[in-house]
Image 1 (cartoon, helix red, strand yellow):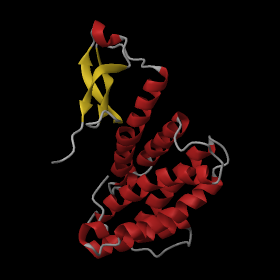
Image 2 (image 1 turned 90 degrees about the vertical axis):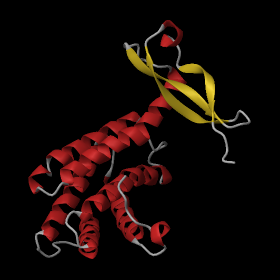
Image 3 (image 1 turned 180 degrees about the horizontal axis):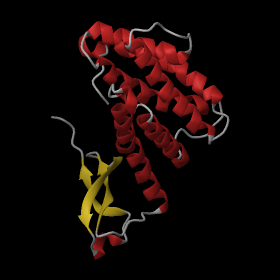
Image 4 (image 1 turned 180 degrees about the vertical axis):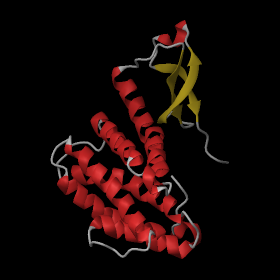
Length: 224
């Protein structure tokens, strides 16, 4: 995630507050439009490309064309760009907002009892598909927005899917037996309580090939 100021930064920045408000409205609208699992893909594609095109429209000096949630978010990006007064300031704000968007929609769907879980593999895969689509369909804008969507996709894999995969390995077992692979190891506190898991990079060997989790633990000590 890029650097986006908040009150934690300097006691006064409101970037995240402005973005969160606009993202929340857009996420609520998107959640209402998602009628089944497949429709998530087209809704996300429309949001990602719609926000990008609306922002490009504003950056070209044209006035706001509509009063939708998409345009409202694009306007926030545009206003922040002008406030910072340097070219490309909107790119970090776009990354933050769309990263929050792909988290808020599932949370809303679970809260209104449309879904039972915030993350399933189909949801991850279709979110990634929509981000790839958005990257390909914003290249011609020449604003760097396509790179933002690629970056969101990569970080979504690293921060979210990797942890989800670990949970599934512990639940159902690993499936990698390649010459090199990773295996999980427990991370515990000084009292032996489980905190979480880490990946260890290994060369294939008889001792680890059939294990889902390595013997032994990493102990996370408290700061003295």
